Image 1 (tube, rainbow, N blue to C red):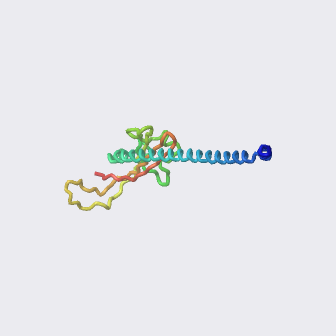
Image 2 (spheres, rainbow, N blue to C red):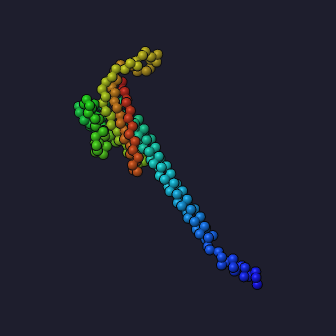
Image 3 (cartoon, one colour):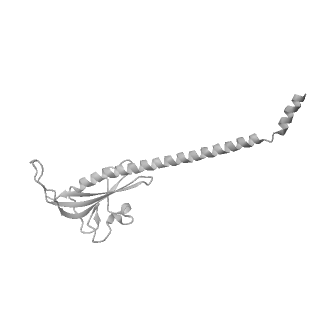
Length: 179
């Protein structure tokens, strides 16, 4: 009988410390789990944003090539302002037309011929005047067109925006030989 009374005596002396320790450990593990879930969610958002920006950049690059091909046709430049994506040279000190607030929403830009997914990049070809080229040298290749000393210079600005708000603005200076 002394054994039985000792077992009951030990049970009476326990104060529930093990239960409190286990509950505290459970709370710590739960907090660590919540923190890691938040970190994972943040990483997914960042990866999505990087992907969207990459998509916008690739579409802007593709449309930049399209705009360069358009500029190679020597489009007619308006006397002032913009007309169908072709802009006159900005007057001394004035900001370019594409820098005006709201230009990319309702301005005189050109849209890409082919939309890339849900992205429809827009571009503007700005006149930068004529420049004399110093790179004309004699060529051995007789099939190459003769080198023209005068070049028409354009600044091409492309804006691409994804549906989730990633935006890319690319610029290129493009020279076209003047016949």
